[in-house]
Amino acid sequence: MKSKRIIISITIIALFGLTGAKVGALWPQQQVETVVPQPVLPVLENNVMVTDQIQIDPQAKALLDRLNSRLQRNPDDFEASLLKGLLLFQVGGLVDAIAELQSLTARAPKFQLAHLILGDLLLARFNQVDALGSNALLEKTAADHNRSIEQLQREARARLQGYLSLIDHVEVPRSLLALSGTTKYALIVDKSKHRLYVYRNSGPGLPPQLIDDFYIVLGKKIGDKFSEGDLKTPNGVYFVTSFLPDEKLPPLYGSGAFPVNYPNEYDRRLQKTGSGIWLHGTDKSLYSRPPLDSEGCVVLTNQEFSLISQYVEVGRTPVVISESVDWVSSREWLDQNIEVQAALETWRQLWEEADLTAYLDMYSQDFWAKKYDRKSWGAYKKRVFSGKTFQKINLSDISVLTYPETNNNQPMVVANFIQDYRSNNFNGNMHKRLYMVKEQGDWKVLYEGRQ
Image (cartoon, rainbow, N blue to C red; front, side, top):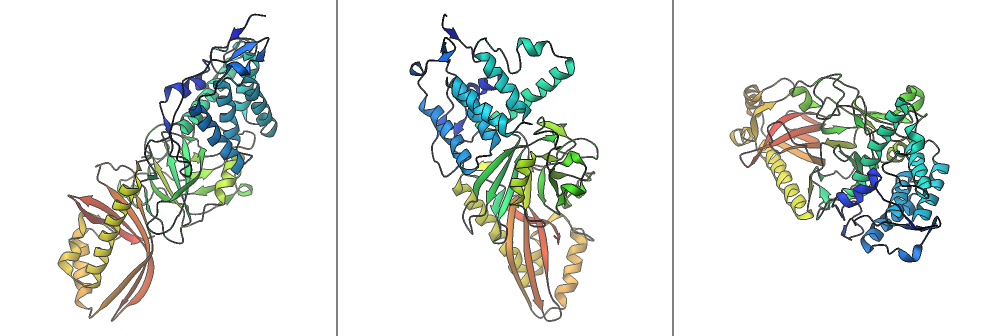
């Protein structure tokens, strides 16, 4: 039989050559920077792979090593198995790719995308495959089946782009400026990449460490949520408020749910409406869903929802959701961390010293609190300060999170801390939250209230 050249035109495989991404940010413990290689065409001889004619590019090998590292940490990382099978096929290892996908579908029988790709790889042994799910057998299926294939194609692109869109020369997301000693983990949602990143607190003055990332499903409509029923996933800094086990939920929510505090204080200020934004699992009849398929929630597979459950602490774990992650160097991260915490300390000192003019100058003209605006807040503080002979204020358990891009493009952070207050006529402590904005080079308090 004449040698056959398989044209690797499967939609998702083409992404290996089109992303132009560099490897280096997702797993910082491996400082290898890699340009994604152009596709290599495998050669079949009597339907058997001619392995001695295939040379794996060292850059492709680096990608393969990263996937193997994921699988060593978690043998049931089904996405890593899927991507490994695709990469093996892309570099010419059709036989190994088929074996990887066969093992995956046996372990994850509900993973529809894995079954579809396995079918294409099996057909690729004998025929050209022009696109994912595009073969003579599937062309005869009904229109609803074709719609399902289109959804799987979108899922495939989202998974692969999310993994391959690795950022060049970055080490940390700007959003995680400081995590308190009792905040062990934080979750970052990158809507543009359909990825949820899990970061571990590394300690004071040290950038947090990425420990895992997952494919996620978002709202059916693109953009920031503004009104109830708009089917969009919100952008903002949120916190997990509770855990709902699967036995208390309809099947749609899978293995459980973590509600977050949407709308938060800033959302309400912008008159955003709606509620019920959760991180939750997938209907147990399915493995995963297309990338834009929820009513605004962030959805994971049930297996991966169970994995992140070990990282989430109700009332403490932050969830930062943004259109895209703002990645910065460790140096830039540290500089902004110092700058914001210095502003917070200045605010504390001026309050403690009862320097009314300088203290109120730390507040934005747009400031609001539960019962106050900037003017009434100033009058209230003037009355309070007049009755003080001393004040002692201590801030502890401080977390500082950079807010995603705001409507007026002003830099904004959210600071959570425990405030211990002592004075001649009142003692007390509380969990407080400040929103601070940078106005003309200076940080100002925009909102102040209880957590």
